[in-house]
Image 1: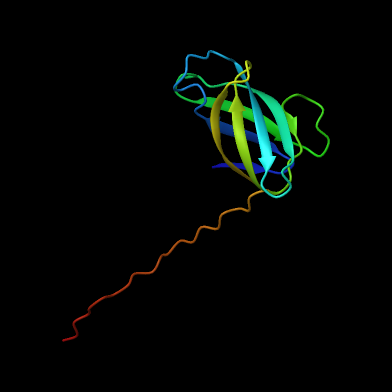
Image 2: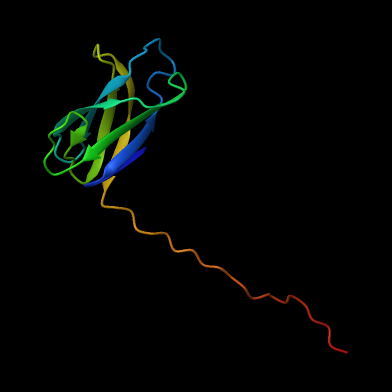
Length: 120
């Protein structure tokens, strides 16, 4: 599952060209909202160093998309499809659009638990 944050730059890792002979440097991504059934698409350039193993795509979620790699997605679940420039389906999956992730709180424990103590 892809996780996309609203109003931010998102770096997505997919395996669209792993099992194909496509040597595209860009892909078309389609997102279909599970709630509204609205379809939105954008074009993303592959910046992966190992294009046959994985594809590293960057898209931007913004309220007013103007560039080809920008989208305005609704919050919630979307079915995504990665297409070649020729229109062939290379990968399908589920994406979740969320507000920005909250910081992870990490707790450390400095005390020692005594299981058994012998008193003489």
